Image (tube, rainbow, N blue to C red; front, side, top):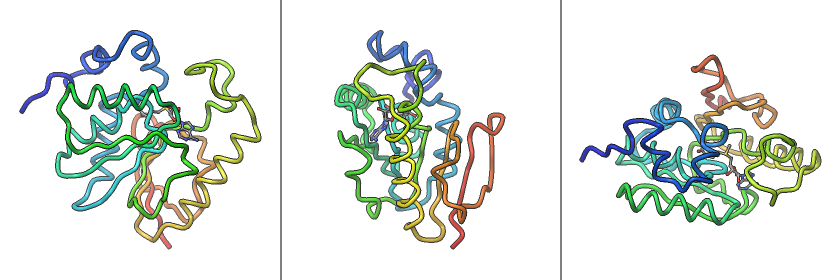
Length: 193
Ligand SMILES: C[S@@+](CC[C@H](N)C(=O)[O-])C[C@H]1O[C@@H](n2cnc3c(N)ncnc32)[C@H](O)[C@@H]1O
């Protein structure tokens, strides 16, 4: 079934209430970027996690284009999980799941490949806050980055990672850069050993 919500960012973002829509340009993955990332991550039977899934845009776009693969998102803001689930219902996407949790509560063993849109940067970004619920703290930023670094390091060879606008501090050295797109804002990595 053709779903016009996925025809353009404007169409998709129009599904959100105004205050979530206004965040889209800076905080939610554009549809063309989501497709490129999903095409790289998708393979039969894999489980894919969006680390900080926000209002669900990456997972839903990826799930629409790869209807046989499950895309999961973990998100620390309950309201954004709620918004993601509302859009999921509206667009009738069945192969996406959203969990309200902090990334430190996730069992990385349950997932094969990962998408990361610089989620922890908000802990040191004083200019583009989603809201005022998150502490601005270099220590917290470093904590999350280190947490993700270790979690990614523990994954097996062949694990795929896509980063968007990342500072790359969370990427262990044994992840090899295998592709870039969108002026190198989007990077594709595979764990070598
Ligand atoms: C840049 S947005 C990306 C949203 C989504 N991945 C997308 O591409 O549309 C990053 C999201 O990560 C979430 N986030 C940041 N730190 C997190 C943490 N420690 N645990 C769970 N979610 C987190 C934020 O609340 C925000 O919604």
